[in-house]
Every structure is written in structure tokens, then in C-alpha cells.
Image 1 (tube, helix red, strand yellow):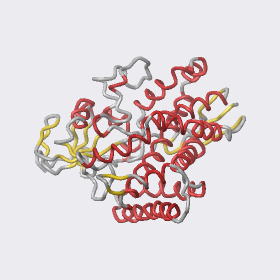
Image 2 (tube, rainbow, N blue to C red):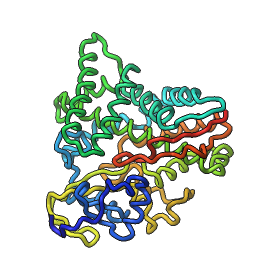
Image 3 (cartoon, rainbow, N blue to C red):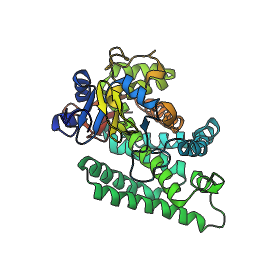
Length: 384
């Protein structure tokens, strides 16, 4: 380690895990580039994060020990795979999926009680994420529960730093996707869906390998299941805790897209991403050696008061370019159009189907632990 052997903080300390966002707020004020054994260099300031996002030559995305398409790739490999991926999220693709997306959102919301309790993470967020992702990929509903269980075990292994378990889970998920590929190849006429189309893609004039297909689909699915369910939980908790905003959205549904992005700015559904320094570099007055890992803490950068005045408040009219909800630079999330459509459809269905959403006084929401963002449990009371 280049700068100092001093440990600035412990990301897994109980007081940090109890309320990650406010712990990051406090750390950003005293140590905006902080070292820990668990995450190495954590970046908490918006300016430092934007610098890293826009300098992929110095801060490489190749931070995984395993093939990760295209998440852990740098140009030119990253560029070639992004060229394949981006059409799956363009305006035409979104228009094609829109009716199915809306129907799934309305179907999940219609299962809400007419007047009673609901646990928003499991019953709304996770169910919606599972149904929408399997529908988008063209996968059967029989995968919903196995995928739900897999995500739970993967988050626990990541929190525990259990590399052996993470390796086994990766192989298990690879097996799920390889089975999808095998099923498609056994059909005389495979369905014309996202999975089949990906299987027919080429890069540099050759078909994608099974390893590349598995990695790509794993990244899409794991990212979707985690972030969409976390987003739904945070959005529902915010509405329940802020009756004024709840009513305003009923009266002014046109502001929903901006409000959704703003709520998720202050309550990050994705807590972090990694980079690796390709050469010695100074960030925020700290000297980082070649090969050392950096952890971008979105939940800190998007609440930086140097960029967002009164950062704990949902405020219309902020500069959308400053919001790092979907990242920035060449690695900006390609699936952002899909995520925005999914969340908007869900929130519109929720607003239309309910009269009141409120918290339950003796059952407070429980925050998720790193690496998850948002909440682990969101008990609410629904009136329709």
C-alpha cells in the first residue's frame, strides 16, 4: 500500500451497517478518500467519483478475477461488447417491451391488500424484479423462486467476504443460464426473445462464446434483481413516510420520472462499484499505487452537499447530469432506459391503485447491509 497503513474505517462495523448512508455522510466530511481492509480505497466525494468515471485509462474497470462482460472490461473490448448490448435498450426495444412491462407492474400492484399490511421488499420489490427480468429475458416463471433464493445467498456471501461461497454461487448461476442456452438449442424454432437474440450475436465476426453469454446474462440479471427490488422498497418507504409527496404525485403524475430519480439519488439502490489504478495516482490528497483497488460509493457521492444543496431533501429542478444514479462515462448503465420504464410503470400503477400508503409505527423499516442498498424489510399499511 502506497500512502499509509492506517485504517480509516471499517465498512462492516455495526454502526456503519445500521445506517450506511449517514455513516458515509459523516465519513465524507472527515476522510473523503478512506482506506479499509475490506474495500481498500473508498471514494465518497462527487468530484472524485466523476474524475474516476471519466478516466478509464487510469482507473480500470478490470477489477474482477473472472470474466465479466462488459462490466469488468476496458476499451477496446468494452467498446465491442457495448456495441452489441446497447440496441437491446434503445427506444424501439423499450417500445416493444412496454406493454408487457406495464401489465406486470399492474399485476404485482393488484395483489396488494385492499386494507392491510404488506412487506414491500419481498411482496413488491423482489416479486416485481423477478417477474420483469424473467419476462424481459424470455425465461420461465419457474425460475422466480430459485433466483430469489440465489440472490439472498449471494448477498450473504458477499457481506461475509466468503470467496469460496461466492465462487460456488457463481458456478450455480452459470448453470442456470447454461440450461437456458441448452433448452434454446434443442428447439427447432427457438422463441424470438432477448436470450435467443443474444445467442445469435457476433463480436469481431465470430459468435459469442458460452462463457461470454453466461457472463453477460448473469450481469444483467443479478444487477436487475438487486437494484430494481431495492429501488421499489426505497420508493414505497419514501411515499409512506412523506404523505405530502404522496399526495403531490397523485395530483401531478407528470413529475414522477424526476421524483423517482431524485428519491433514488438520496437513497442509492446500488451502493458501490470497483476500479483498479493502472498507475500511481493521487486522489483527494491520498497516494494510490498501481494495482490498488478503489471502491466508488454511489450512496455517498450522490449525497455530496458540494453538489446537491440540502442533499437529504427531494427537490425538483436539480441538474440531472449531476445525478450518478446510473453512473457516467463510458460505463454508464446501458439498461437505464429499461430500469426507468420499469420503475415508472410500477409507480404509476401503485399511485393509481391506492388511496393511502403509510408506515406502521411499531414496525420500522430495516436498512439493508452492504453490499446491498436500500432496505432489507419495509413493512407498510396499504389502503386501496
